Length: 243
Image (cartoon, rainbow, N blue to C red; front, top):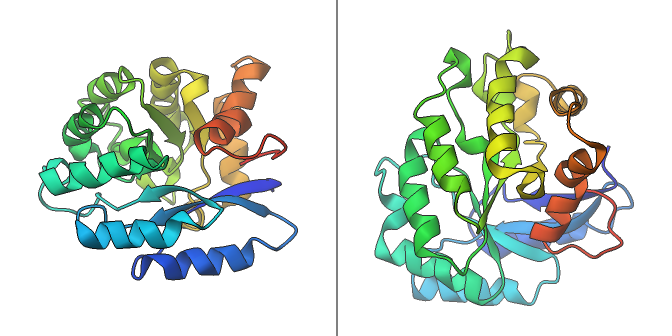
């Protein structure tokens, strides 16, 4: 079990309610919640401003997530109002977590390019089609996204995208190898995807699998993925010991 974690939004409205609840949980000894990625509707103009203002004074807030994955319009995240809200995050020092599906990657690349002052974290590798072993065009789009300097990638969620009852580490390896090659360890971080990970394994089994998939890397590279990248991206205190 990690000694420090970053909580990524699970609920939605109202944005500050979940943040308050997580702050109450943060007083527990283990695992210590060191940061929060909170929900904010970034495309609502004045409402976005009000939500951000309500969160800005909360010391654990490190970033924002507004779910994109279930939007039927593939251009949803490049609407002017969405871009404006994401740019705003960068101006006030908050990152933006991208929870998307693989077919939305081209629009996400546009979003990241349009917001050079905001740092992004791609959750779950963009949810590739692990269950059927499809690599393209996901791999090409990941390469294009990784070429942009203001984005990191979270190694998480792969078990949920595979067959929960029949997945193997070998099925996951091509996707992990791809992001290691494209992003490099300094822009990769481990993510639990808890509690969704329980669909196909469990937290301990996923940690063991992730470590096995990355065991060929140098110790410094593994330490970056399991610790240092998250500490840097989410701006955790230097004495925090995990994420």
